[in-house]
Length: 418
Image 1 (cartoon, rainbow, N blue to C red):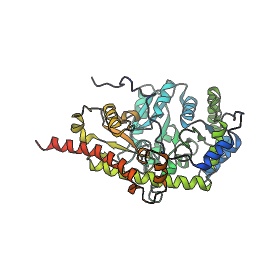
Image 2: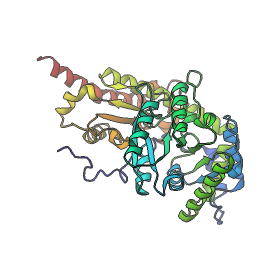
Image 3: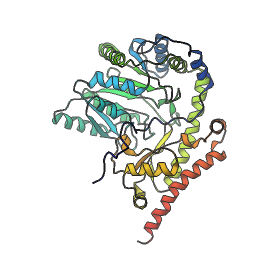
Image 4: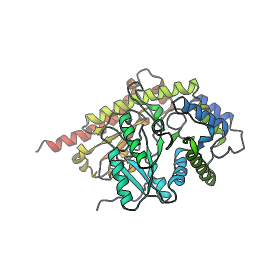
């Protein structure tokens, strides 16, 4: 029987983190953190007024107006998702998520004892469920006595690195609204679009303002992953007021406060001063370039992958190489994770981490490991006009291409005797 929860590879403790940018900390951010290091007082739960106002400014510049009394901050998006799930579905509601989805979404609902139902996504993008599959899932869950209340989605997606088209998002939001679902829109990657002029990104909060809570983890584009900070924007009106209050209750019970130095850096980053926006733009260009090169290597080997459109990763389907992988003892996503992690020398989480079927040979590949091994090499990658020409980047891409190229050659050897 195929294993479903391999020993030593549990779904929570061994789950993959957000793909990091692999870059040195921006000096301006480090200075803000250091300047606040002397503060001994604990910031209020949910964030101090200055931080909440900075978050409002951040969203207002993206067409989402808000007020500080409809915003909350916490040490990372997972904490906010726990609080939101407890507030919205903790008393018996069910949670819906796309398949695949970010690795950290489902475990937090399960920790609260809430069932999680995966809804398929369309072929062209991930992060947003197919609207007809969503309606069918809601119907089935209710027929079995369930109470679906909450849908978590992401327009700019981890793990697939795709951006859902506006027409799909509109249909899915309409379907969710018709069924009375509250939406949590994870917009962690919205500021990492590889080609903003060719990709249209809309927030569900623009379409359904009364039933969407937006969550943004600042590790996506503004802060280092080791400085956990995230903000949530709640709907206006009485429903949003009540949800905000319940979330603050949960955060208070958890004593989930931002550390004062991290809060200072987060407020500065949310204000988007020039050093932050310039670094973000440079980092996005770099990772877009590397993701495109990695995508080419994957396709050249005969595997499948959607073109990456956002983030610092891509999602590869090695199903066409199944016979070649079987020769290496790889028959499921966990074995593929072990195989690629050992050969690439960096984590390569399998698709089962993201809610995909264990038997599907899918894997998320991050681009941060292609920047170089030292801080000097990574800085060179960031500042070089043509990073793909740097020797250390070429070596990393060649290593990636070699691993996938070997699988392609193995696959051809399987084909020739037929």
